[in-house]
Amino acid sequence: MRVVISGVAGVGKSTILEIVKSRTNYDIINFGTLMFEMARNINLVRDRDELRKLPVDTQMNLQKKASAAIGKMNNVIIDTHMTIKTPDGYLPGLPEWVLRELKVASYYLIEALPSQILSRRQHDSTRSRDSDNEEDIRQHQEVNRYYAASYSVYTGATITFIQNIDGKPDIAAENIVRRLMPHD
Figure 1 (tube, rainbow, N blue to C red):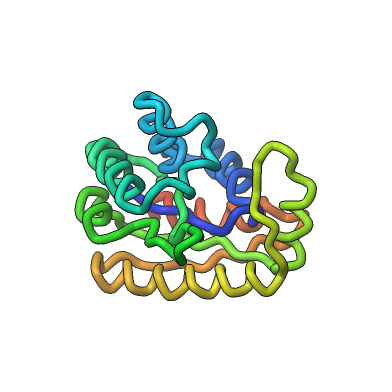
Figure 2 (cartoon, rainbow, N blue to C red; figure 1 turned 120 degrees about the horizontal axis):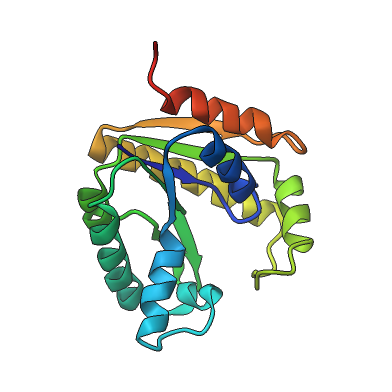
């Protein structure tokens, strides 16, 4: 089974995924990291944050290659974005050609208060982030919900919205683990 866990940058997804991985038998594949490695191998980018600034058609080709590779895996959590905010607007993180390859069973969209996300971004020196504000973050989370709903219509997969309460990633992780583990 393949599931997608998503959320805007700074929502706490990486922390939650570490906890989920320790409590399940799922592997975690970061879609963007796989795309980055593919792009770096052909000298398109030097760092991961340059991916979203590539021409849209180049990003689409990288998405196709990454989804074909992931679509062959089982018991995997795909760590990705519902949308990518580009200079030209929102790009689907999971367009039809990606969804067709992945055959996703469930989508999990992690959300948090925009003020908490902004604070996390401001304290993360490991990434080169665009300067957003709370309204931009609120809008991006809202757009992600719309895209998740459209992906669900196309695939028939469920969507679960997971709240990441500040300082309590264990609660968010447990909500995901309960849904991933087989029921007795």
